[in-house]
Figure 1: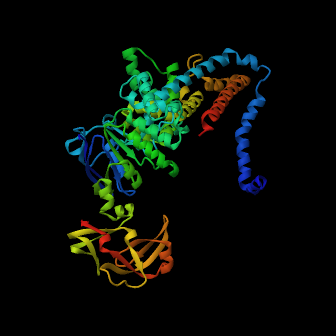
Figure 2: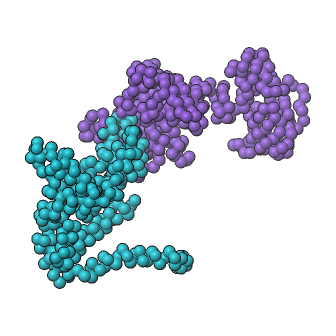
Figure 3: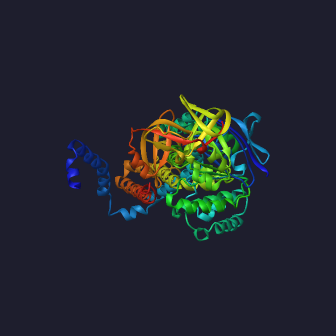
Length: 352
Length: 264
């Protein structure tokens, strides 16, 4: 696969530093996933040329478009980087057709040719009937598709999407996601999707870059990232309990006075991931089978799908998924002291 | 409910408010009451009215065009370009707003008069005299009207979302194209409102004009100057001219309210 983008992004701001390196290949859709304030939008703006790097470099198709150390700077209009903005930013005074034709005209095409080509884009996106409409009359999903068509029409090498679902109502997101997925397939270049929504990332992207506090904390395909989270944030996103500690064989010390027995041996710094459905609660200390158990206090019990989820504190905090029957039988209420049990076979340990 | 709310307003505020309205409207009512209605049709079409009116409309329109030509780029620069001394430039640009127009006229004479810095040079090189010509009228009007336009357009630019320009840039538009095809259409209502304000200000210009352009009938005698000169000989003629200016101003105001201000 051809590398489209080779980025080493470094942006310094008072109280914040973005320091992120990654590459994107042609045809690849990669999600930049992270909590609000992690620096995702700054990364997007740097790539688009809307915010200069402090240091590092952005190589697009083998050409440096921003490299402070070498004095290289290519303005956004000459980068061939398309952007679908969070609120789309469709030009309100232009029709849908002229919005899509805008980039084609800016590239030097005649108004007529640009319109013909734009009409083709609207047709492929299923928007032909709306070509004469102003953006104010479009629904959220339609506006998103127009924004995508507008960004793709000038054939950018790199397409950036900023929280593409954030402006949409929850009930239209699923359908729009499917349409967006189809739309992205039209793009032969690389695509970077910036989002804080793991569902967007998992459904649209083939690879995830997890960013926290301006740094890349984990990357890989969806299966790896979700099975082996490396930070609290990722663990919470995918709904796993995550502990970090020192491992010696099948024993991982994760807190003062708490060592977990895991299924497979690891050594050195390690993570232990435990699904909430693998956590059992007991009124008395369980005896018998070699399992991990420790005392804990119930903090909260709430609905979680057709199950109930209990949050507990203790040497480590832990989330447990229980059936309503189990909750009733244990009379779980906040403040209750219980015992937590996890089978060694239900743990996943991996090097940190 | 509405009645109770009005009844609840304190007299200490309502009385001065009513006085203020009376003070603003009263003189206009007096102008209408005193107007020589019987001879008005004849006076309206007389050369004494039509010649200065035509000159005023022409010069105010050319001055407004000049304001647009200089003021829109100036407003854009002040709103969108970071440069050292930007605040100072903005303050300087608004000086003519507070400067007595007569002082403006004197200053213009110092630059464009026959002995002025630029005027001297124009006269010797190209044989062009500016002072006391219709061109001087246009320059005087532009001088006092330009700040109105700049402030209105800069306000519109600051209210417009600059991210539309960023979106245009990511679509391959350079800043000039983005300005032409995105920014300008978006701020068009603000530009139009600023142009109308500038036009009205230019139409009423007196002090700078009489100082820098004089009051030569048919050449530099605009409506406000004609009103002033007529006051000394023929009050009815002055009232007629004033009435015409009042009507033109009202038309502008109504058009502004209906087309732009009402929506803003």
